Image (tube, rainbow, N blue to C red):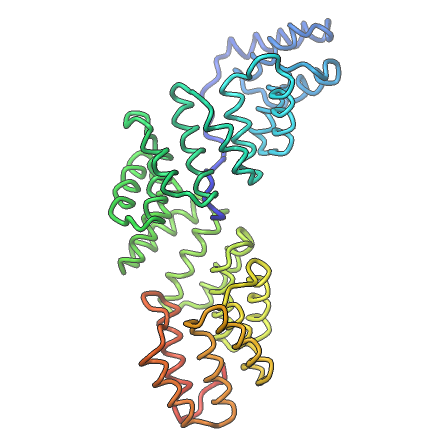
Length: 403
């Protein structure tokens, strides 16, 4: 899924030894006198990495590649710096050249970094194929297995992803390993295992994103909404670019009828993960509940771009057309929605809107009673509760707003 990716924010750097900094400065001086000395340049780059002089390093590497464009070591360093700067296409270019040009197999750490860059370019199959062939030692082994598990998750193989994580020895399981395991266990309907893994992760790192998302989801599904809210707030505060966290928090706020707050959170969520159809649908239904047909239509159109075969999107279009009292168009969308999802609730909502707008109150009441006795409306989530309430209002003989 969209946000099942590790946080690549740079961790606080360890203290740098003054002697290393001074040695690096001397090497830069020597190199200025002998700029074509490749061995000296590579030694300077190693000291630059140790002293974390990233700006100077970039210049050293770029100048070196201008003079020695095929040097493998320079491309390895260039790839690592690009990876640090989150410039994944450039990192892939450098690592691909290393892999294709090296006379012997590249070091496993280089292959891991190549797979890491590929993962962030959504090249999951290619990244997995690299990782699956690596024989690594700690600590890279654990990181590689976590990345491999993330690839498998994106490839639709969560059970195999869990197996990859469980191969990591207990003493090597850091907060990220436990957090990813928690999220995978939740998504394979193992709530108890997800909670245990999430708690282990959060003991090691209270801000571990995957664990926060997993535990919040389990808590919400168990009707412990205050606990879920706390975890989502921590997640959105510590990881403000995580769309999944904002979407989860919006669901809690919708349950508390804080629709304006939920709308703002969902608008942020769809900016951060524009391919998450569920967030677009929730945003659309908030607009429907407010009677904003054009805004709801826009959100359903974005959902339609993601998946044209999702029945509830067509049902949403039917609702929007009904809000605008366009019976023919609404019925067209209803037919499509029923074909794709015979049990979808949106078509009933649209039908009741149309009957209500035409003053056919008895028919609306009869349809509502039939729906409640035979249809499978969404249950266990806030949208199900809201829709049931609104259907009841629309079926009543008294006047109510047509949305």
